[in-house]
Image (cartoon, rainbow, N blue to C red):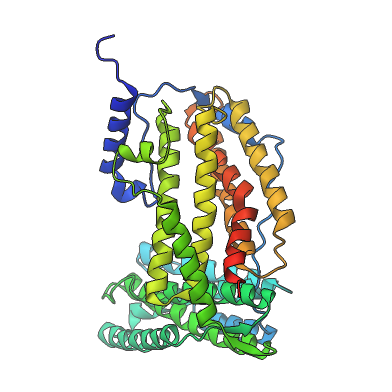
Length: 454
């Protein structure tokens, strides 16, 4: 028929749309809209049916590489209370005439109070997470209090003081980042715990640095307040890891330097990724290079394209971290490569077999979600979260994806029942999640073999 598009021309059109959106879509912040692919129409009632009376995935419970003392939590709470002491519970036009400024102060205050309350109730392993969460409470409290102060104080002096404080804490973060010594008890559980501990340390320090670079100090009272919050977050991060380091070192029985061990594990991981030779995503030929035939569905092609991007990112991230000496980050990126590459192959094969195809009814979406939950339960059995290790952290991180996908489906269901919605792409996301959970135990086993090798 005149004008009918071949699978190749359809794919070229798809990739052209992808390239036009690459600055956003490939970062995971948006999506390429499908281009004229025939697909089943779903409604809000169908979206509701995906989750109605459906089983819930295992709860996300993050592992704990070091146990803080309660006193550290109380000190952080005291800091939040100190920052909020001069911020009234409610503000009116007589207090702050500008409604936008007033709303900013109130929202930051409410965020700080909420996070403070959750952290105050934490016990056991949750103290670790509570202490890290209190960094956000301190950030919000500082933003609220500084915005209120900036209304009446001399702005130039306030901005100058804040700039000085920012450079001081930046220097402290950089010194800590550059002075990491990789240590731990040289047993299997000691190596695994240390790998998780240093990944968390590096990640938090990187986030603190990013918070300091987020914005410049401005003369706008809201911007000044939020900049103060950024500085407070970085300061809180330094405080938290001062305490964690003290607790971690105190718990070591016979500390061993792990730097050569971690470097060797990373080198083995990089060699493994090089042997795989996963191709760069440079156009239509990529699909042939990874063994993908004509899927005839843009949404599934996009799922596979983004999945391939995750494989490339993990591989490149491992190499970058190794070159930069960020050994904890590199080890976790190496595990990410093992998980994403193996899962990519599994999903690709299922698509080739036709067991993953454009859903023709809501039952197929619901079934794929349930199979992913079964894979999650099996992975939880093999990777208990009680073991502080990169593997148990990877499980929790993967399980968190259920919250995001289910949340998208719930938002689609939040319309009149007959309203047409797009949920077929969630089918591809559940299929990807299922593949990641199915291969995760074997990916973790391969990672452990390299880390625990003599």
